[in-house]
Length: 129
Image (cartoon, rainbow, N blue to C red; front, side, top):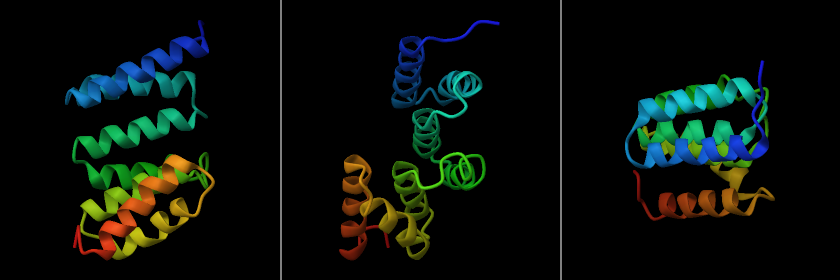
């Protein structure tokens, strides 16, 4: 059996994200599924899969994925919590989004904290309600 180098895994992750950006969700899903087999403990792969689900407007799927497959492996991952909050807002479950967004906003991950803080500010302004 062969393995992927870190560089190869990063390249495939970038390709999956580019496919997502071009609305090629099936291609992205196949690449991400393969990456999950090679890197099952990589939070970056889980985040990319969450982005792909949200981009495909499968907000329930994103929440289910984060709460299901990611729950034990990535407990406390601020970016995944920010994505969960984003998906919940898009589902119209703004009150349910407050918890994961608050967690992410208070985290040490600057990108997750900024994303979550921006969404919380939008919620306070009434955007998304």
